[in-house]
Image 1 (cartoon, protein in one colour):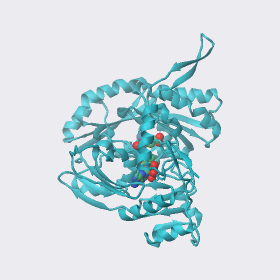
Image 2 (cartoon, protein in one colour; image 1 turned 90 degrees about the vertical axis):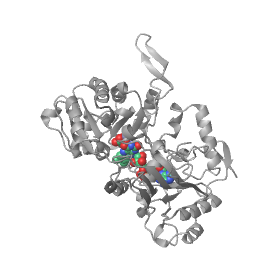
Image 3 (cartoon, helix red, strand yellow; image 1 turned 45 degrees about the vertical axis):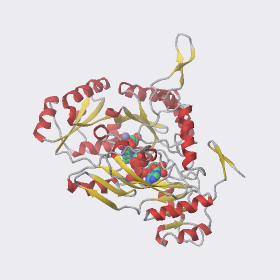
Image 4 (cartoon, protein in one colour; image 1 turned 120 degrees about the vertical axis):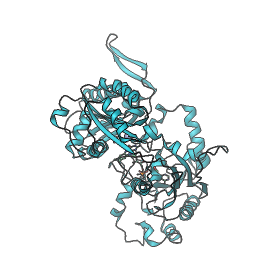
Length: 495
Ligand code: FAD
Ligand code: 2HG
Ligand code: ZN
């Protein structure tokens, strides 16, 4: 019996059996195998951290989690799974926000958490080679005494893995300055879906020897293979860093401010982040960072956080002071911005739309979504509590968050495809006052339905809003080429 899989047919998946656990015992020590299958005495709740995502939105039914320590062990496990048609979910820190890191059914979870050693660091070139399971913060701490920083920073740094960052091509708070991981990742080691080890762990800055295969795994969300090690370029630590938060009376102030800031700060500008008033109030309510004084926030519609990173403190401060009449420098300003996601999760259940749209439309998209939910009667303490926007202005990336009392089908149906149609390139249906009827008009912002978090399980059905049929067909061909059995993170990225 065969089942349809993208462009081809494949054998149905197998569930893990006790005999598979016996085989895994020949590869891994007992403590690296967590399984509820007989004869184990493991309590199923011990697998909850691996089966549930960070938002509490997606829940898998994995019976078994394996925690290999070496690349060879990963390879041996994957080879066995390929021979048995056992589907696999690679898992890093499980901080992903699109349901990519947890099983949809009873897939095998391979956690990279035990692969957490630095393999090498060259303080001259700044090139770091690390196991995929190294936590981002631990790598930041590792390179700090050598006066280097990681080229990526994000609110989940205390839990997310460098392998997970690469697999999601995470953007974060430093992208404006250091660019995307497609630029700073120099090499990868990957276990392919048949168990073969692809060694592209080069530490070369330049290597134009044909197709750059590693790029395919950056942002593939574990659908093409398991990243086991990463070679990454770390920039020198800035000698001076300043940050300042600005309370703005109108959203219309953001765009001219961004232009002025870019012009006046030029090379020392390292971040320009946006938080609307609702997001700010929520971050303060849930104790993220230091609140500004009542006087400072009086009449503020939104806030921007500007960071400079440069070579000479006096020079940078002078530039900033020239630009701004009041300067407040404090690490807790970043805590406030980074803490919005956590505050949102403390407030309720979040529907997250991570979108690329023109900066000028940030507020319109938030307001339009709020009004849409209001028109459906869904705004209120027991349904949608808040609609807010924050994100990375410099990258044109808005995080539209809708915070509800609970995840419900009604809210979900109200939001999708509404938000995707607003953002993507399909037709939208709008009410035409004069004609007194609905009209279909060409949308909208031709934006991206996933700027930095990925597609995961959440947006497979929405991929076509940002990718045309030809692109999706070639993505499917690439997937089929690397993973003909479709065992690697099934149901993620591609339907
Ligand atoms: P996981 O969540 O475990 O996995 C994510 C995906 O990658 C899954 O599809 C998984 O299968 C795959 N994967 C994981 N490890 C591997 C591997 N070794 N090989 C192959 N595939 C793998 N994202 C941003 O882009 N910018 C932000 O600013 C940002 N801030 C965040 C703040 C908070 C508080 C939280 C909770 C999340 C944030 N995120 C952000 C989401 C972001 O995607 C993740 O935090 C991070 O990149 C995922 O890393 P992880 O190790 O937790 O991966
Ligand atoms: C951020 O920029 C993250 O803080 C998370 O990408 C965004 O919670 C979100 O929607
Ligand atoms: Zn973000």
